[in-house]
Length: 143
Image (cartoon, rainbow, N blue to C red; front, top):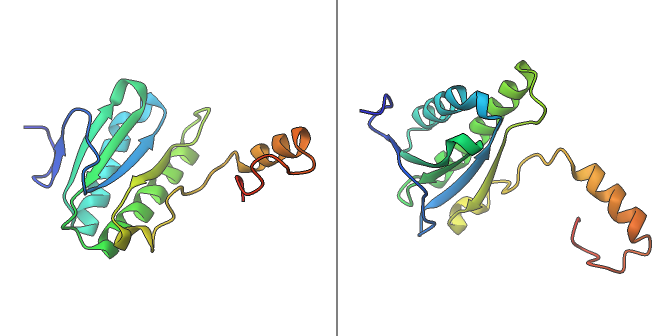
């Protein structure tokens, strides 16, 4: 027994396959809270998930079933990101937790922001502007 609901399975590294794959990065000390957040978001959206990855490295992979309703998966990602944002705001950690959709079927990709909030985007633009003021290298890379 892993301490989770029947719809949450904990495993080793996960393969992509045709299911959805979401990568969550977080401060290692937040592991228990992140696992609880994943479990509660999955329960609210009524989707089955499998969790794998490197807990000691602060990176988990969440696999969603291809049979899950696209709207439910989109709701799960939004709820997970909102919970991670609250978690990061409540604790004094040096970085924000994030959730990136690594792979999703087309029906899920359309309503979901694949990257979510990228807190360092402004810094990346400033560095690119400094070293490539004419925007000649990879002109559409950062949008």
